[in-house]
Image 1 (spheres, rainbow, N blue to C red):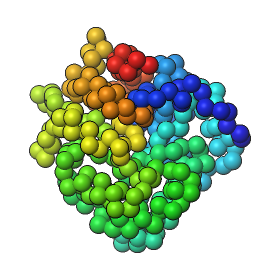
Image 2: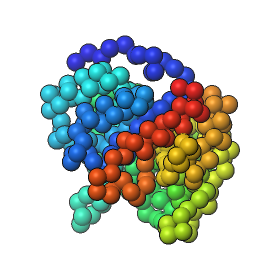
Image 3: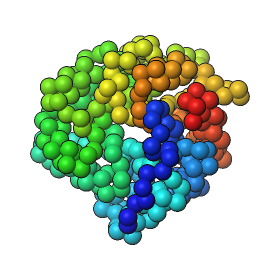
Length: 296
């Protein structure tokens, strides 16, 4: 199916609004269909989406041509940009042994091709971790190097997610940036989850003992390598403010430094798993805040 030319939201420069379908995890497949999620995002005036490949793609990793055509029609119908494709390199899938570097590459290459087929330009490439600090498997460089030619051919950017308790000034982020500089690639970068800026926790909420909040300005030296952000939110007030993460400062910095990309709403509140809870209303609160700050 031929895609229509980019619409206005795609051409706009600067931070743009989107939604991670992970936010609907308690509803998807039960009270919400794939099209329901598309319609909800469109209704709140957002245009970008992130999916989790093994959750939202029917018959993953081998969807039918009919399903792919349906996907592309939904993107056109609701003026949705496929922004980020969430995938896993599941090195432990066999159980009795880890995948070899070559086997891990084949798994990643399969997802690169499928992401391209569905119109995505960014992949949230999650690798197995080997520490409480979320450090990836030791052979991650070899896996990514093997995948770079295919990613370049199909213009796909692979981005590990930087998520709490990881610190933006820590060794893992430094290693990723060093890899980018050493290879000179434009097809490996970062996805920053705004949980790394979280300042407030409830009295009974778990706070990882390894976590130290980042200041919003810590993101500045990383901006050239950031292709997407998870606009994580925990608590929205009735006057449309996120009470745990300093969004005003974060968005001000993104705008001042001309960062161009999508902020994908990712709701992490525990109440989304309560019976009968509809996350769409909470997402709308955040998007009123984002619209006010971004000007979109």
